[in-house]
Length: 124
Image (cartoon, rainbow, N blue to C red; front, side):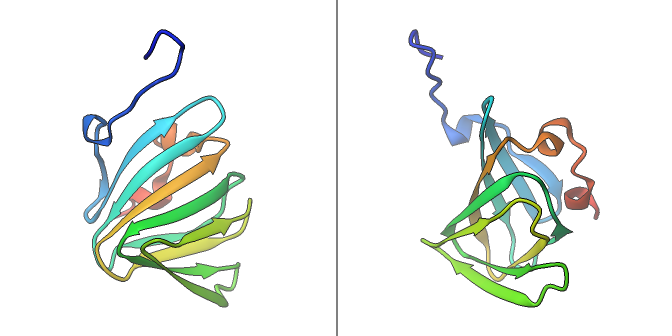
């Protein structure tokens, strides 16, 4: 923390939590937003879920395929350098098409990620 109240972070200094084999993440959370690095091995699946939080998914490396909507009828591939905006309560699931580093931004912060109740991610 700086004297101004600003906080300086280094990703490599933050704990890298394993959620299940092939899926890890690091988090920075403030009062009104959350930023995360999500590390996915090729073939890793994030099961369908929905949340109140608005989400921006920015792919730094690799690519993710998203299935959007309750019936998963819309399929979107998001590649390095691209961003997918996911509105509140839109059901979605994803699969890593290759080894991927994904930056997720949430507003408000994901309480289930903070308190460890994100069981949909942790099911092995």
